[in-house]
Length: 162
Image (cartoon, rainbow, N blue to C red; front, side, top):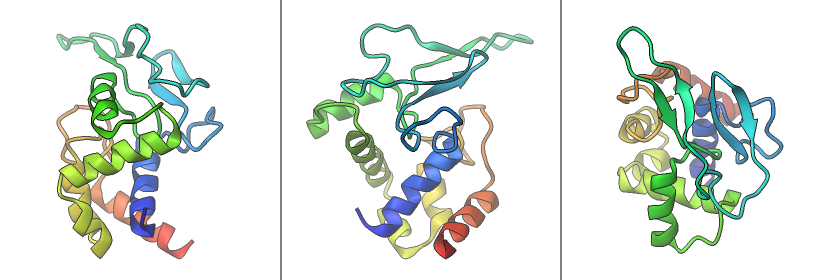
């Protein structure tokens, strides 16, 4: 993993709120999507936390004619169970460990054609190329809170100086 890839993964984790989650014991790799029930972490990395039949977690109750939102997002990059299963097989991943979570996120970034932008330091371009994957990035259609590109670029620049 290059230093810019690592920084970009750190940026996603920060944006998703996993690396800053008050309960995380390992940089957000152990975070389950947060809903009205509050933050939650997991300790078993042998598989995705929803893989053994756990029902999707309520993220947003129904209100004002908008249906309820449920999610199976988990880990540092808030990977949905259905995508975990596909990437687990494709990449021959043995577990849901930090290394496996990183491998999936890097593959997703590659599939969106953002590798070159990340390596060139064109983070705004990279953000928009992968925005359809992560709800916290601007330009996605998830209808959840997203950071602005300016905030994310400022955070990227802040990590460069650290």
